Length: 504
Image 1 (tube, rainbow, N blue to C red):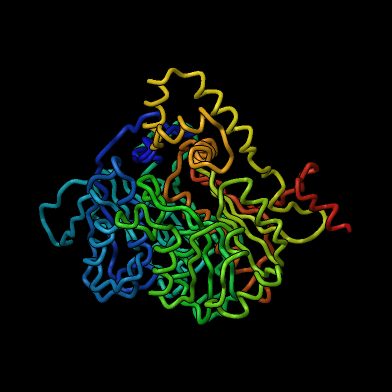
Image 2: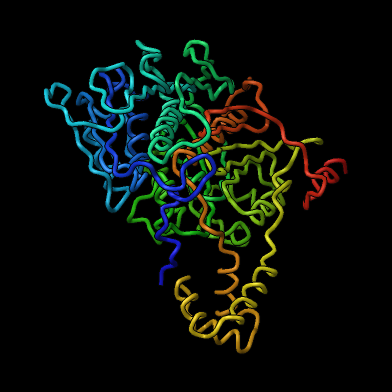
């Protein structure tokens, strides 16, 4: 039986700064790509990512129109399959991502009677084919710009292979569409906003934004990624399109996709529901030529599992409990405690909260926070006892209805309540229910934003001898466009005792 929570569109839940109910639904968005950008890798990455994000904004976006010259595709689809001709290949993304997708319409730019649209996103030029709300978006290298077409940087030459800038531009544009359709109460709409993922700076002037080195051809040391949900999907999305000469990523996650996952898991489609999250992620990476391995379990299970099929240098890290590079994409304090306990040489993390995205680097130095700081382990025993007390206080009819609504077999719970014993099926079912997190707001462009901040931090630390000087923490607020670096002081009550251990 499926829990009731799996029917929730989590991007329609309450979140600070937006109206409680959408102000518009089933809207039509037009994406226009000019000839120069359509013929570039950056332009195709931006357009495909934007459509991937918009098609997952179910109930808000009903139709997506595409105007672009037909040209040979320079990219793969998000699931790693060959794309075919651009822009026709974009139609495949929506039907793969969502079972009842938005209607995709390829329009001819020369059509004299163009249908109306509620919003237009222009990639590369300030065209006359605009309808409704108008946005301009470009991304190339480590840079992205989104705002009013009347203030747009025109005549740019997209010549980079790097997916970071194009994906950031897509996330920002999708966020601007979303804010208008959901209803913005606090914050602002982007008007003339440029971002550099290399320097961490913002500017309305594209030329003032600092670009970074090319990723293509670089060699990335093996990484352990724990958590293959939204942020983990986004990190894999970047790795799959970075065209690195060498990379190996091991993804660890014991969870499966449900219906609520699809609004923000960019490498998963509706046919992946009820399948392990790591499977879709690793399948895309392998199709993209990136070395990858899927472990559908917890980090504790991985430490006790057979690793004979892994590359020897990767397996040796777990054998010796000497992890080199670990990336946290988990959303629970207990899991973060477990990862900090591995004491890796380099530790990174990405997370979201409401309309905010964040990435952290946790350097092993005194005075810096660790992953355990401010992430206390959940007290599942207390939650289980509270749930038992609640169930015993219900009459049998109400208890039956409640358990059925949560997708739990009432018979095994009744057996446990009548004779409580640890290790029974009923106890396990109640423990899982007690630890289940309440569905909270989440949306794809914020998750991708966190993944991009995380990927930029990861690449800067691992690939380049002279990285830009950045703070340990980078935040991006889609509600108002705020983007900044900072440092995080340690928690004096850190359960891992990071400062005491470092001094010792």
